[in-house]
Image (cartoon, rainbow, N blue to C red; front, side):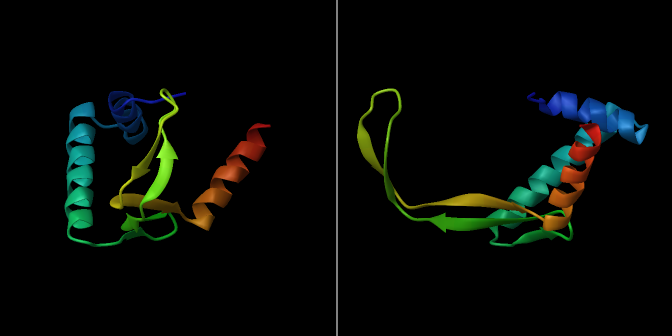
Length: 99
């Protein structure tokens, strides 16, 4: 299942018993602030949830699936998200309860 941003905002508003407008406003503010901090080189750490940071990915040889042609992907920066062990354990516990 893929959830769009609008669907996420709707669920957030329902769970928080608030308006979609206010949820959209604060979600956009959060995303803008995160991007701003990542551009500045900050590591964002939500204790017991996740760690978000920019890392340097080295160049590597890969290929285009459609054309089967090989090419070198140059070194670049990318965003890395690490989910905390605590959050992963909580997720696994809820999945086990559903089974």
